[in-house]
Amino acid sequence: MAGLTGKTKEVSNVTPEAQAILGQLMSMFGGMDLSQGLFPTTATPAASELKPYTDMFASNNAYGLAQTKEAAGNLTGSSYGNQLGNKMKEQGLAENSFLAGLFEQRRTQDANRFASTLLGGLGSPAAGVQQAYQPGFLDYLTSAAGAAAPAFAGAFGKKA
Image 1 (cartoon, rainbow, N blue to C red):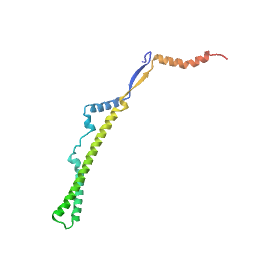
Image 2: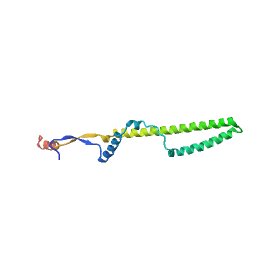
Image 3: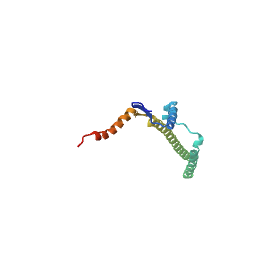
Image 4: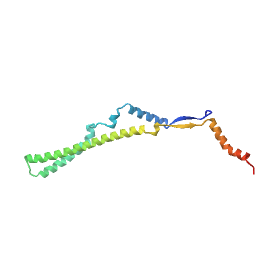
């Protein structure tokens, strides 16, 4: 029930459902070291995650070494070994740079996901409150009197 006079009150921008989710998110961030999320380390993935890449590397190595053997022609000894060694070094460098790029991309995406979730939660308008005026009895009374005033003015006004 409204009081005699109006009052200002705070109204939350959040539905109860969204409040529960936002609360879980903030408590998760509150209990962790934010530097780990924003600057994650590059962890080497498990061997099972690397299996598709190692299979691809083995296939590429077999093809590359077969080409090198054909290109070597009738070379033997250290000349032949030198060409094979150079090809293996080249392929090893390409594989390592590919994996380093892959791990760095993953690390960067993890940091970006963390930052966007954190900033999205902190900057959400759902976290705020609005000031709202709740009218009271006198507000309604003066509003009604203002609406009725033109009718009374016409009834009691000047006559021509």
